[in-house]
Amino acid sequence: MTDLPAQKLLYIKTYGCQMNVYDSERMTDILRPLGYGVTETPENADLVVLNTCHIREKATEKVYSELGVLRRLKEDKASSGGQMTIAVAGCVAQAEGSEIMRRQSAVDFVLGPQSYHRLPEMIARAHRASGEVLAADFAADEKFDALPLERQPGGVTAFLTVQEGCDKFCTFCVVPYTRGAEYSRPVEAVLAEARGLAAQGVREITLLGQNVNAYGAGREEGGLAGLVERLAQISGLDRIRYTTSHPRDMDEALIAAHGTQAALMPYLHLPVQSGSDKILKAMNRDHTAADYLALIERIRAARPDIALSGDFIVGFPGETEADFEATLDLVRATRYASAFTFKYSRRPGTPASGMGAQIDEAVKDERLARLNALLEDQQKAFNAAMVGRTVPVLIEREGRHAGQILGRSPYLQAVHAEGPKSLIGQIVPIRIEAAARMSLSGVLATVPA
Ligand code: 5AD
Ligand code: SF4
Image (tube, rainbow, N blue to C red; front, side):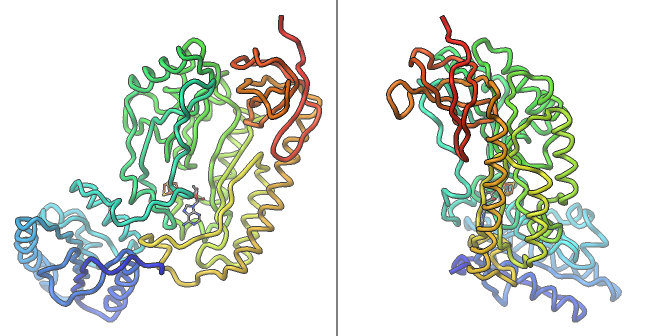
C-alpha cells in the first residue's frame, strides 16, 4: 500500500480546453496518494480546485461568481466544525495571481499550470496557516524523520535542539507534513540551556534541527553563525557541532564561521540526495549538482580539512543508470568522510509516492551496493590519512577493554587509546597509529601531569 486511504474529498471543476481536462486528471493523480478521493459536488469537499481557462470572454468573471458560491459553502462547513480549502489553478490563476486572493479572501492559494507538482506543498501550507495539525495522517518513521535522541545530561557531550520543522517539501519526505513549519528557538533560551549544560561538565554540544542551518531565518540575530559565535563564548564549551543542514541555507556567514570559530568543529553533514539534476528537480531540492559542488568548494576554501558527510537516496522514481552515475560522479568529486545511504521508499502521502517510473527493488539494491562501496573507500581513505597525525580528542568514556579510553576527533571519528579514565572530559592530543573504516586508534602524545 502506498497511498493513504481515501479519507478526504476533492472536487475539481474544469473549465475550457482539453489541456485543462488533462491537467485536472494529473492533479487528481498527484492528490490520490495524499488520501483524496474525487467527489462530483462541492458541498462536502475538503479541497476544491477551480481549474480555470482564460480564453473566453467573461471567463474571469465566471470564476469570481463561482468563488462567491464556494465561499458560502466554506463558511457553512466551518460553522459545522469542518474545513474547506479552495484553490484556483489554470490560466486565470496564472494571469490574475494574487489579485484573486485579494478579491476573494476565501481562496487559500492560486497556482499556475507550471506548479501542479507543488499542490501537496501548497495544501500543507494552507493547512498550516489555518492552524491545522497534519501529523495525524502520517505514520511517523523513525528511520527518516526522527532526530537523534536527546542525550541524558551527565556526559561530556550533549545534543541541544535549536530548530524544528521544515519548509523545504522534498517530494520524498514526510517531515514538512509531520513536523510542521520551520521554527527556531529564541537565542536566549538556547544560550541559557547551553550554559546549564556547560555548568554540568558538558564540553561539546551538537545543535540539532531538521534544517538547523536555517536557524533564525528572517530574524535579526545573525542566524546559526551568530548563535555559534555566542555559544563559543561560554566558558567550558570547547566544541560546537550542528546537524542537519540543507545546501540552500548554507549562508556566507556560516561558511566563514568554519574558518574563524575555533570551537566550530571541522565536520559538516550536508545532504545532497542525488547527483542528477533531473532527479534533484523531481525531488524539489532547489539546487543542482553544480550548485552543491560550488558550495563545497567555498566551504573547503574556508576550512580545507573539513570532514564532509551526506545523505543519498538511490532509486528515486525515474532514476536511470545515467542519473545514478551522476550521483557516483558527485561523490567522487566531493570526497566524503562519511555518509548515510537509503533506498528510496514510498512514503504514503508524499508527492513522490504517486510518481510513475518507480524503480525495481533489485535495481535499487544493486545501486545501493555500488554507492556504498564507493563511500566506504572514501571513508577509509579519509581515516587512513589521519595515521601519523596528532589530533585533539575529547575523551568521552572508558573503552570496551580495560585501560582503554574512547573519544572523538574534531572530525567526529571515534578514537581509542590506552589511558586513565581520569581523562574523561578532557581534550588530549592523541597520535594516530591505525585506522579502520569506523574508528581510529592511537597513543597519548603527551601524558598529562
Ligand atoms: N526514502 C528514502 N530515503 C528517505 N529519506 C527521507 N525520506 C526518504 C524516503 N522516502 C532520507 C533522506 C534524508 C534522510 C534523513 O532520510 O536522505 O536526508
Ligand atoms: Fe525532508 Fe530534509 Fe527535505 Fe525537509 S529538507 S523535506 S526534512 S529531506
